[in-house]
Image 1 (cartoon, rainbow, N blue to C red):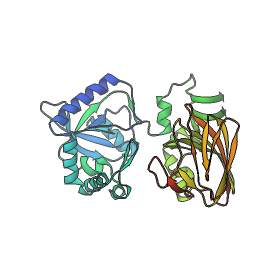
Image 2: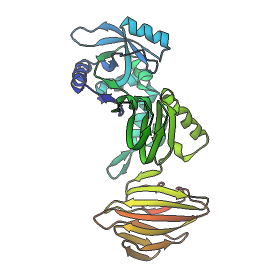
Image 3: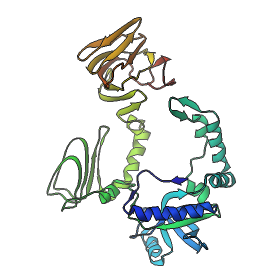
Image 4: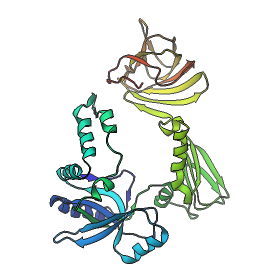
Length: 366
């Protein structure tokens, strides 16, 4: 098993592949391998691994210790010693050895995972684990659960132009920059500005006379921060969660088995969605206690069931779904169906759904 975070940048693929081969040899012999990044600078944002004794016949060394993120002075001593590597969070091991190590070091995690696997739900091509059982697993990283406790942890030094892209400042470092150090993505215009990262997802973003900023524009929100403060975005997330704001848990554009919906406008008693239904897909047969809906077909063909009636609607045609009426929507065509849905009522939450039939086996979400 090669476990890799999804957001890492590897510049030298050949060097990475060589390190993986070295780790595979160690894993074959029963070791649990991790990859330690050869430090390029004094860094306080990463954890470190202290290298131990060399292993005979393997291009790997025992892990002497995992250490938490240091202060600047301590990080400098790590760099000077040559004994420390950055903790990459990448691992390679045999599956049976990992299970053995979990059983020995953190049996509660193993037991919770086994329980989650014992009662799965089939959802078309997906196997969904038992949620309640999985939530019972302790929230602990593999470093703390296993690698810090086992005597079989080894580290492979990796010097491959690695960047974990763990913060927007790292995205700036990994991006192509202009002559003034600006990294621009999307529709962005700058004037007398330098060292900025701009990620414009949907609108024009303009910067004038500012330096070293991160500006990220998405459908959900706009972030403006100094590059040096980019890692503190987590505090904003904490505030969103404390205020129970929807931005903390769901995107404006939401994926569903049948397609997507995008909440493009809303108020106290109305909500407007852009709904895209994949060819051959179908929303559940359902009803709502608190809202009525108007559907306008923008493109494609819609098959609508409303009560005991079935309608076939094409572009520029519309229909009305009264409050409390059983209804469904499907796309019988060969191209995506796009509709605009206008909801009105006293409560517009996604949990106002009574589902009667669903081809995807769901019971809660639309």
